[in-house]
Image 1 (cartoon, rainbow, N blue to C red):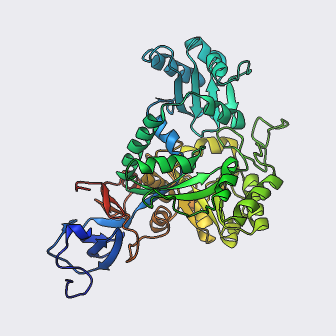
Image 2: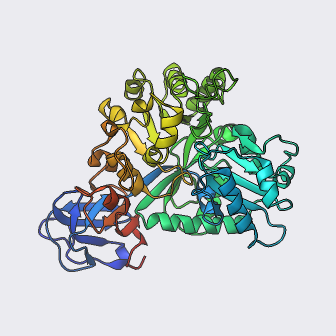
Image 3: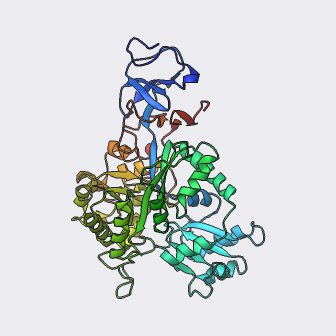
Amino acid sequence: MTSPDGLLPRRLHDDEGELVLGNVRLGPGGPIGSVRIAGGEVAAVTEKAVTGGRVLDLDGRTLLPGLWDAHVHAAQWASVRHRLDLSGADSARSAADAVRGHAAGLPEGEVLIGYGFRDGLWPDAPHRSLLDAVCPDRPVALVSADLHAAWLNSAGLALVGGAGHPSGLLREGECFRAVSALPEVPEEVLDGWIAEALRAAAARGVTGVVDFHFADNLTDWSRRAASGPLPVRVDAAVYPDRLEAVIARGLRTGDVLPGTGGLVRVGPLKLFTDGSLNTRTALCADPYPGLEGTAEAYGLQETPYEELLRLMRRAWAHGVEPAVHAIGDRANTLALDAFAAVGCRGRIEHAQLLTPEDVPRFAALGVTAGVQPAHAVDDRDVADRHWAGRTGRAFAYGDLLAAGARLEFGSDAPVAPLDPWPAVAAAVGRTRDGRPAWHPEQRMPLRAALAASTRGRLMVEPGDPADLVVLDADPLGAGERALREMPVHATLLAGRFTFGPYEA
C-alpha cells in the first residue's frame, strides 16, 4: 500500500528490505523531504513528510550521494596505519632519530618499515649511513609520502637484493622493486587491516574507491569479497603485466566480477609517464633548481611514448580504459597526445602541473582529471621551491573546471588519508590550518568540489544505487575547517548501513 502521493508506502516491511529516510535535507542547501529505499536502490524521492512504517527521522540532516575516493592504494594505506609515521620529520637526522626510538620497541629480527617522509625541503640528504648508525643490524625500509622513493639501511638493502647501493635512497623503479621484495604480512592479516581501514573510510561517508595497488587486484578483491560483504564498492585497477590475462578472460572496465556481490568491478589500466614532485622525478619542460646540466634535470620519463601508445591501443581495443599517471607538465602533454592519437576515453591521474595550452584538451578529448586536492596544500612549499615561477598552473583545478573538464577527487592514500573531506576543503579554500590561500584563483566552488567527490551528482534520484551519506551539518556555507572535519551521521551501501547508529 502506498501513501496518497503514490511515492512512499505508509507501511514498510523489513522482509521487503524497504526503508524511508524521513525529514532529511535533499542535497546541500536543498529542501526537506523523504527518500524511499527498496531492493538496494532509491525507489522514490519526495519533498513530502512520511509517517508510519520503517521510517528513520533524520531531524533535518543533509543527504548526499555516497562519496568516492577515485585514487587509493588500499593495501599500502591499511599497512601504514600499523607502521612508523615519519610525516613529521623535518630532516634526515630527525627521521633517523625516530627510527632509533621505534626500533627499541620491536621484536628482535622484525623489519622496521616506516612511511611518510618528505625530503624535498630537508636541509640534509637521506643516506644509508644515517640509518646504519641507529640500526646497524635490523633491516630498515622507509617509504616516502609520495610512494616514489624508499630509504634503506645496509641490512635493508641486503634483504631486498640491493647490497652495495651507494646511498640507500632508491627512486622510481628501484623503489617499487625494493618495496615489493619486503616481507609481507600474512594474507589474512592484510585482509583484516584492509577491512578495518575501509570501515574507517565508511565512517567518513565513503561508499566506493578506485584501488591502484600494484598487485593482482582482481584476484585479491575477489577473495576479500568472498569472505563477507565489503563496506565499500571497489573498482580494481589492472597493471600492464596482467593486461593480457584480463583480455583473455574477456573482462572490460566496468564489468562486475562474479562472486563479489556486485561490489567489485574491473577498473582501468594503470600506466606511468613520470615520477613525482617531491622525488624530483616528475617530467617537466623546465629543469629542477640545482639539477641543471644533469641527466635527470627535467625529471624522468617512465614509459617511452611509443610503448605508451601500444599499451593504450591494446587495452582500448578490448574495452579496458587507460588511467595514465602524469604529474609534470611535459608528462601531461605526452599523456594527452597519447589519448588524442589513440582516440580513447580514460583518465589522467594527478595532472599536477599543466601548460595553459593543455588545460582545454581534457574536455576536448573527454579525459577525466583524477586529482588529489589535499596534495595542493601538502605540497605547496615544495612546489614553490622546485616549480618556482610556475605554480600558478599547478593543481589548476579552477582552470580545468572553467574549461569544462570532468574532475574526480581522490586521496592517493597513503599519500593523504583516505578521507574525502580534506580534499573538498582544500579544493574550496586552497589552504589548511589558517594559512593564506595558495593561488586562490584556482579555488573551486563548493558544489563543484562535492560533485567531484560523488561522481558528478549532488542529489539522489529514483533508480540510483542506495549508496548514501547522511551528514550532521549542511556543507553549504561551511568554512575550511568545518568542511575538513565534516561530521558524518550514517553511511549506506546498497541500502545497508556501513556506518551509523542503526543496525545493518
